[in-house]
Length: 205
Image (cartoon, rainbow, N blue to C red; front, side):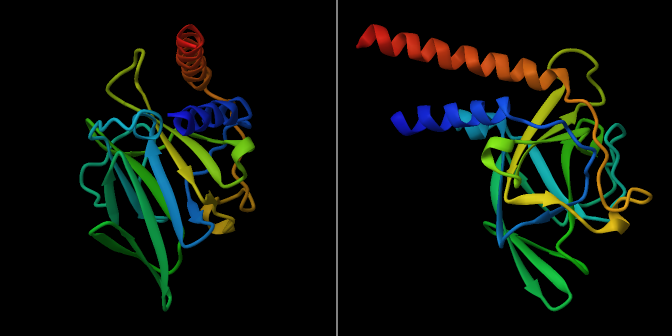
């Protein structure tokens, strides 16, 4: 229980230190395994059945229009540890019993299965306090224009791909965009939950 509280506090502190979001959509692992989890799996260990996918860096994905025809190299529900293993010019990826192959490099895109098909993230924010390889990605439901239309995926041990071909005209550096207001809304809610838990602990003490 104590470890859980410390971990939650660490995530909140990390969110407080998030840098400006970037428009990076092509990623690369920083070692041979990377971890991914949505908000509920990361903080509450509650399954939600959200489906995420890993795609080729050249896949045709949009952050606003779903693609139901494209297939991911690998997909997972809620959370997963994905291993990356060089295999000649290609990279084998695996999570649990699911496997796939990235062709030509370890670069990849991330997708969320929306009501209209696969979409990529609309923004990505580095969690600075946890290091340059920890990110929060926001996927926006194209069918919901009201509150609660954003779905978060936290990713660890990945970085924005430095290949200039992934970012035409930008010299390999993703452009900065403003941090979404919903990130601060989520942070406020998380702080509220932590404060409430601390108050209960003080009363019990």
